[in-house]
Structure formats: C-alpha cells, structure tokens
Amino acid sequence: MLQILIKGNLIVIVFLLFTSCSITKTKYDSIDKKACIEYERQLEFIENYNFYLIKVKDEDLVKARNFFEKLTGHKSEADIQFDGQLPPTVQDYHNWTAWYSINHKKLRYNKKTKNVYLIN
Image (cartoon, rainbow, N blue to C red; front, side, top):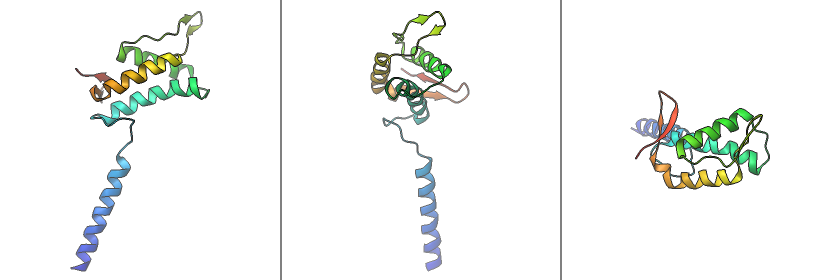
C-alpha cells in the first residue's frame, strides 16, 4: 500500500512539474497565450531598440512595425526615408502597448497561418 502511495505522489509531482514548465508567462492573463507571447515578442524588438539601445536587425523592426500596423490599425509615426522605413518611435511603442492592455483578451493565434488576429 505504501508503494502505491509513493508511486501515486511521484506521478502527481511529475505532472505538476511538467505543467508548470509548459506554462509560459505573459504580461496579462489571456485566453490565447500564444497570441500574447507573439505580441509581446514583437513589442520587445521595439523596446530593446528604443529604450535599451540594443542592436536589433532592421528586418525584425520592419516586421514588428508591419505586424502592429496591420493588427492594431495604428500607423507608425516614423516616416519613410529614401533608404527605407525608419524604426518605430517611442510613441509608437506606447500606443501599441496601450492598445495591447485594452485588447489582449481578444487576440488569437492561427496555427495554420502562424498569424495573430483580433476577434470581435
């Protein structure tokens, strides 16, 4: 009987460890964590570039800018230069963060297209 209890407790402990490791932390509690993780990942590119002066690939900044403009409907304040788009501004970061705080529960992730979208 003692062996069954020990094995049962071991299974519960292993299960708890597995589930706690697979849960990913996001800024807000949300229904679709994958969508929030992707939103926060894109936001992190802009945050690193503007606030921490960390070198970010130009293509990552352009992808992040396009991601936010398409999803939120808020266009970037940065103009287009002769050699391409300017990186998103600090104000863009604040606008897209504010939008996220309001709409995070409406975000969903499409596994087939690997895109984040907004539900009504």
